[in-house]
Image (tube, rainbow, N blue to C red; front, side, top):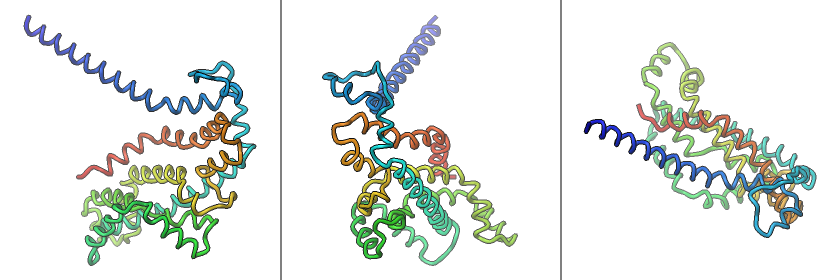
Amino acid sequence: MDYEKLERSARLRSRAVKITTYALLTLWAVMVLFPFYWMVLTSVKSYGAYNSEWIPRLYTLSPTLQNYREAFTAVPLTGYFVNTILFTLATTGIMLVVTVLAAFAFARLNFQGKDLVFTLFLSLMMIPNELVVITNFVTITNAGLRNTFAGLILPSVTSVFYIYLLKENFAQIPDELYYAAKVDGTSDLKYLLRVMIPICRPTIVTVTILKVIECWNSYVWPRLITDDQAYFLVSNGIQEIRENGFGRDNIPAMMAAVVVISLPLIVLFLVFRKKIMAGVAQGGTKG
């Protein structure tokens, strides 16, 4: 009888813990998702309906897509999208080449002072990005690359953190594979392409997705280095939309533009979320 009571008590405690956990997770999910819901809700309200609400409503009975039409007609939002796609693809592609080669060199090649160089390299992570913005701005300006895609792309083609992440991932591959490949006459580049990259594909996919998100959300540098609307990205195009498109008071139209700009990243994360988690887990696992 005592055993049955203990078992029943254990089941009740387990159920209570599970209910409490799910309740807290549900509350947290609501808190995280509510801003997105409010953004979408505001974007489908008409300008008049939005301004007539003395107390904001959590629903609308007369949704409209007029704000989305204005998002593509009041400003060249399509052009901003094209610029952002070109910037993202070029920056991510060059960054992958640079970081993969650098990570391979630190993980597999033996050269004098490698550990010291890598330590100094990692120390760059301690320097805030804001401290190098002015230096990059002066360099790009003196090179005559303001208001060009090259000026937008060059400061973003490498990342100390991504090199470190890939280096640690490459270092997990047994040395015996490398020595066996060298015995067979395989070059370092062929070994990297045929062995290391396929094994570490989840981490490389994760780095790629994170870089795409970083490029898509880039704001400070594009805003600083470009003042020509022909080179605006969607991130700094929001300010142009606010100033010269809908005006500061047309909040529903602004929210429609933000929804359109945010949607590609949301879809990207939902599609590749499992690969992102797998890549981060693999990059942070030893042995």
